[in-house]
Length: 309
Ligand SMILES: NC(=O)c1ccc[n+]([C@@H]2O[C@H](COP(=O)([O-])OP(=O)(O)OC[C@H]3O[C@@H](n4cnc5c(N)ncnc54)[C@H](OP(=O)(O)O)[C@@H]3O)[C@@H](O)[C@H]2O)c1
Image (cartoon, rainbow, N blue to C red; front, side, top):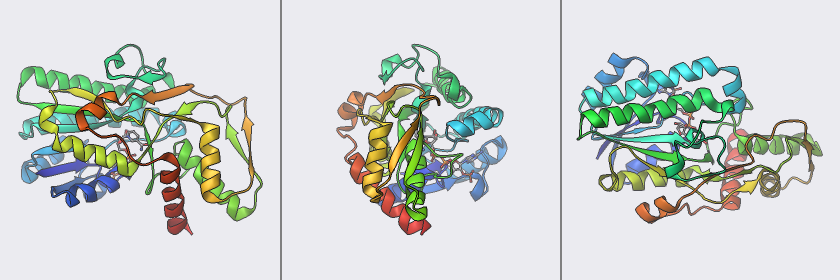
């Protein structure tokens, strides 16, 4: 199948594009670095007109960690509104009927700890990531509107937890907890520091999806695309979380660092639990993420050492 991957040069895209090619698909990536800014509607539509893909996997986004969201809420909000609306409008105008939209779990109501598909609209998103989450919710609404007017148009939405692995963002401003901890531990190993401070109590529970498994889930969803209904939502859930302190101990052990952690308990914890329920995924894809967290962390530590040393 001919597939355009938007954001094929990003963290997820770098895992996805080669795997899609290896699975026999013809893949074209698009990003600003490759000369296509989706915020420019005419340029993006011309690109789709000339490539004529059967399906678009949408991974492009203006995205960062919680600190990045606090610094650049306006740019994040505006860019993602423009990216989302142009994406769907250009796909529809260019005759692309199938869109697989990659969605972060922050679209779920902030008050929930466990996220099941039927609960997506049962409350507001968490205030801390509102500028990123609202445009992603808007895109679902835009897709629904196009589906109502065109019965042949078929977007499908896959909701992902935090991912980690090779090519992750480790710089403090862009990273999630796992990448940030991994970088701190690797640096402490180099400098000989014996303690690392972790923000909050260390108790919040998070789930972590290895990026290669995330890419595999997309490939399975591409291959079973016809079994989805228009505008359907499905979690790609690990369904099992670990506390931040357990996560820190796992990275410490994978890196072979012998120091210890202190907890800055006056700093915010954020939501105490964020878990995607993956029952629908197990049934529809007949699959669940195979990489254990310790194995995935060991791979990531090895990649980090090879890349940055
Ligand atoms: N990383 C995670 O843990 C995680 C977890 C859950 C869901 N997700 C979702 O997965 C998707 C991809 O995330 P990621 O971590 O791979 O992000 P990323 O590493 O920041 O990659 C973003 C990609 O989008 C492209 N892009 C950004 N602005 C663009 C624009 N205006 N026009 C065209 N391309 C643009 C970037 O390339 P240029 O900068 O060259 O344009 C890059 O290829 C996002 O929707 C994200 O919400 C990620």
